[in-house]
Image (cartoon, rainbow over the protein chains, first blue to last red):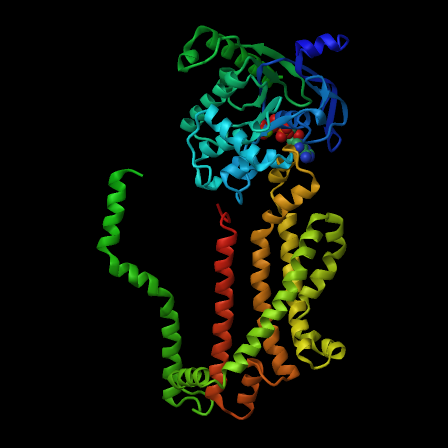
Length: 264
Length: 269
Ligand SMILES: Nc1ncnc2c1ncn2[C@@H]1O[C@H](COP(=O)(O)OP(=O)(O)OP(=O)(O)O)[C@@H](O)[C@H]1O
Ligand SMILES: [Mg+2]
């Protein structure tokens, strides 16, 4: 990085992992986003919270290049989307994993798509699962795992190709309470170990605050950013974090803003 | 599962082995009822015994026919035709169906044609096929293949069209190009539906082969055997041949169900 910035002094390293300028998107003539701007500071875990149907999924799908935008510009680490390496974790692991492949083949799929040789694929997958101390028999098919394990496998699949950003659309919403805690802790571990910036849609305010450096609060349609609330408690965050004064204060503040928005 | 629940379920198995046997034999009840009713009608004299032999006489004819070999050549001729027709239909039908399904425009432009011919009873087309292919063996196979082809194409295309959008997106976001999405996702997503097409395809092949054997005429084949037996009022042979076609159809269906379970292990999970 240092050497790079010395040899090419005109290009400063980008301060934002995601930067959105003048984004417009309509569905069937009805505007969803109009001149939407967003800058997310580097190396953060950012969660998105907002009312139902306000366009949270649409936003991360546009940023990750899954759906086209009408107008505007989106950059990931200063590059256009298609040049960035991204990982994406879908809400419904059941409908996004490939049930005809073993868990191992699912995780290795992004590497194979890139044309990586088999021994290197195996190395990469093995390194990944040993880093996060995951004990799963990866020869089994995804549907033979519990929900939490399946979501974990799909997170590993999103991580295996060293993405520079990880997108997660409601990664906990198909999980029960206990599994949510398990996957959430793993996700925190992954974030602390890799410091890959993450953008995550969460439909539960407590979940949104708990892991995040910044909580983005979105308004009703047409959607704008109401406030980006920072939450700076150091990691690892534990069950004690939930009762800390900072957590309670930030949650209360977010809830109040959300209530105000709903009244409008 | 806790240790106690494991134990209790084992207990249940041990306590009710008889109930389990009964459970397994349940499908045979209907068969026994049918044979019973058939036997009662046959011995009651309500129906001329020349038209309805007893089930025992029929089964006897079936077994001697199969063992002494007069029925076997007919049986194998029909099986061979059915499989040839099915193979032709599958080899062409699956790729065409998958290709049609991957392009909405292509599918919509062919949809009417496929639906029209699917709705036309294939037996109505037999004279047309005779015009083109004569009364040869090939003619019978082609017409059966044609009917099976329509079913297979339709189902494969449908399977691709209804592939889970989220899996296609997942593959795309991992960097898969169109060809990889097709090969790694669409093709496999369509497999459960394709198997339904193949299973209906083999069934319709058998139906049309039997009809064609009756209608076009042939040296050997169960269809011909049934119609010949009927003409000379050899009723026990006729019933025995009908039974054999029924058993054949049933076994083919089971065969494909088993194949489906093996190849589409994820279906319904
Ligand atoms: N393909 C589409 N065609 C038409 N309207 C769409 C389409 N996709 C999304 N919308 C509309 O855009 C709005 C935002 O949808 P989106 O799924 O992004 O919301 P969300 O915030 O993720 O909602 P949820 O909380 O239910 O997940 C909704 O009102 C939805 O009806
Ligand atoms: Mg959503």
